[in-house]
Length: 392
Ligand code: HEC
Image (cartoon, rainbow, N blue to C red; front, side):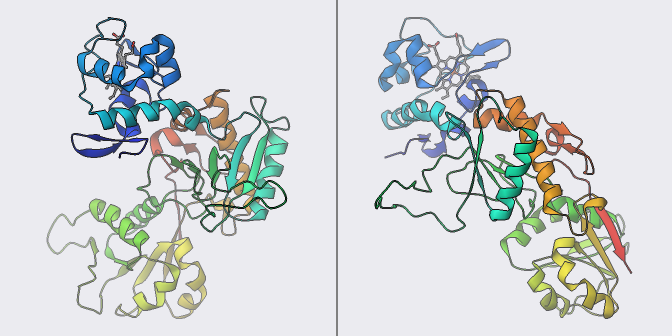
């Protein structure tokens, strides 16, 4: 059987949030518009409030098929006609019954629930900054910050001598610092974004892809070397699609080195897209002393020994120069709180996850001592500015 939230459309399992309905009726089923025509809210309580017949999945299926509402109205042709099988329409109906609650899980009724990945210190710093900026909370709700467990939460916690929240079920509106199970929105992942993440995620730093692009632009050509990690592979795919090709034969330019290529690699510059642990292995496959280019995170632990061995190094830094090299966690916390509070303010007192992400899409901020953050154009990271630093 299809689970709630999934339906089989033309034989393909599709999450309903991704179905065409969302484009007109809103991904949170709160209603939207198509051109000048309003598309009503589809959450079941609203539908059934229009017409009690919608409480039955069969009535919904019939309306979708015929375009005639249970009360006899012929719906405008703007509303497409759909054929849903009984199982798919039941799944749709179940989803419409829970979507309003699901979209607000963790936003009220008594607090705005935020789960943090990254340790007690981060929780305390965020708590102190939120208290400073919003001593009375927001929309009449205090913030409730809890440290998320790093490990997969237990499926069941026996209540021995008292009540204990099951971590997986504790409400969560947004996660900060990294993905947390049960929190659909992740904000400001500490590791930075690669550049190809799903849309319900927002960062503070230029993505790794933006850093790689900035490094590539900083010099006329070289070789791009990657290790086998999943992150490096994703990054390599983005970069490979965009590296400028040499216009004429013999001209220098950037090239991706395939893992099958004969070693040693010869190049004047080498861009390293890998984890820090892989640096010695990759360097052992390179001929001579090319200039090394890498995101700061990758090369930081090796800078001293590599400079001593005569390598020239170029680092990409996704943080403003004043925040580097040791960005204090408090600076990041200040910026993260400024962004979070702006987005929650714009989202309103009846904030849904979908509205929060839309609020991010409209957000531009100029935090003191930080790059301008523009989520509307950048989509996820808020900035594509990168500082390039040469260490000869
Ligand atoms: C292209 C835009 C568009 C898409 C896609 C769309 N709708 Fe609609 N829908 C509308 C509009 C506009 C109306 C209002 C029509 C009217 O009032 O005549 C509507 C009306 C409805 C109604 C009737 C509510 C009432 O007034 O009784 C239902 C039910 C509905 N849509 C469900 C869905 C579902 C489920 C999907 C996806 C499978 C979907 N719609 C996809 C635009 C859309």
